[in-house]
Length: 396
Image 1 (spheres, helix red, strand yellow):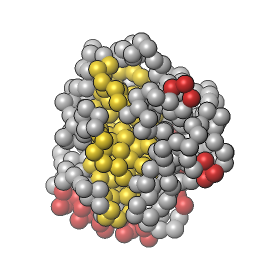
Image 2 (image 1 turned 180 degrees about the horizontal axis):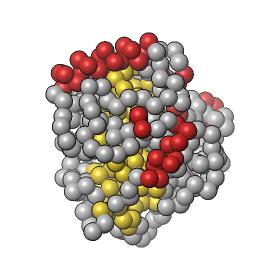
Image 3 (image 1 turned 30 degrees about the horizontal axis):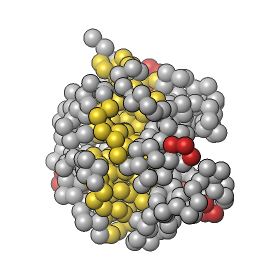
């Protein structure tokens, strides 16, 4: 695979970004591959099809992976809860998850004091847990270059009036310590090192977050938070901080066309050039930004992205947990595998549960919502409904 140098990529991308803002990509148009780079190998890319026939294109792609649902040895004294958050450790082999304390949504009720952050070793054994009584609704997880563990905690445990149902759930604690609607940074052993946002308080200014979904850090330590989800109250922005947690800036997208705006910015990944890939799940696309928030590309060929991961070779993995062949403008769900350099999709892992019904309401079934990959190319996924973890290896 050939790579453009970063300066050339940014120079070309800057021109294309201006053009993209001037004439926004419509919901049913196929965006071009990443600017300045031709397809490096055969496969499905944006120009090969339009939105209406993406399902057929996906079904024609190879699936060279075998699924293993018994690799993870979950602690015997507890139940796996909904897990959208999964990440590879600093060693490239250990796997971290943040699950919802044995439940479907919140760390309340009989499991309120369960530690939701779990580390598994390379053999799938649970070796560490932490985060009890600190996290309300774990949604995203990231392990940085120093081995620190970041968790995006989606919901407040005190501001129920602002949320969809406008009332506290039956098992909500009375007068709890405010938690949630923030991002927590832990040491590898579980010591709390930093908090971004104001615990328990929603907002959209420099000191607050609202439904933060994902977190990623850059080579120089800058922090990027996907501050938005499809449940209210929600921001639809990316927030950038320096390595100390100082607010730098926030952005949404460019233009006024709803199809190009961030809507449920559900996942984040970063490539070898430092470009920020955003899973714009609400608009069925990945958006690519530079670290200043300039829009460089928009891709629809990687599905309706709930989870993103980019490995050291710039292979892009996109987990689609919400598409359905019965839903308008949605398709077969599963994990797309391709190039973060060219936009070419080379493999597709269909959801083993199939597409039984439209995704809303979510209490039917969903596929892989979180995805990560170890240093040997082994894929790990996490599910929300029903809760589940899986390992994918190349078939021999």
